[in-house]
Amino acid sequence: MAGLYTGSKRITGNLEQASVVSKKKPWSDLDLTLKIHPIRKDIIPLKDDAAIKNAVKNLLVTNAYERPFQDDLGANLRGLLFEPAGFMTEIMLRDNVYDVLNKYEPRITVTSVDIRDNSDANEYGIIVNFIIKEFDKSDTVEIVLRRLR
Image (cartoon, rainbow, N blue to C red; front, side, top):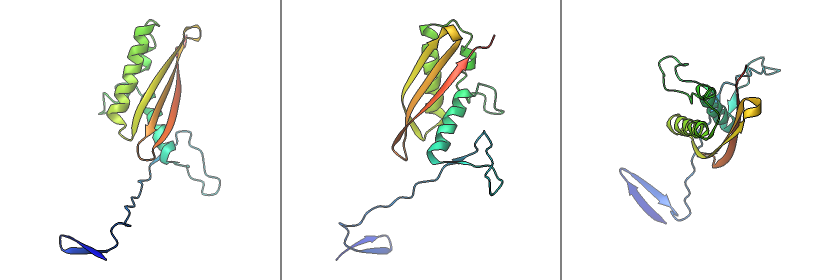
């Protein structure tokens, strides 16, 4: 039986078999669809990976200057919808997505951003693949940006 001194405390026991157990922080977010729980008659919150996925989607659809006192929060993708459709616009869309997620969502690591140009329907399809760091789980968010006439 080995012992280890840490400050004023002594740890005893078999230190080779000791394991570190960490508690994962539960994440929760408000579901914007506002679904009502049938029994509690309260709004059902999103938990863990669904909450993170919802936060990513909210960051992508938010434009600059939409949130008070947070001018630069958001990807400002709607502003790029009326640029000429082409390779340069796709690069700007991709860069905006990377920038906003790297700056405001530390819980994820973005692995890829795929942009699909559908000029016939006046829309862009954006697929963001990312890894949730705490759960070590891959997830995807897909949004469609449309120009309305």
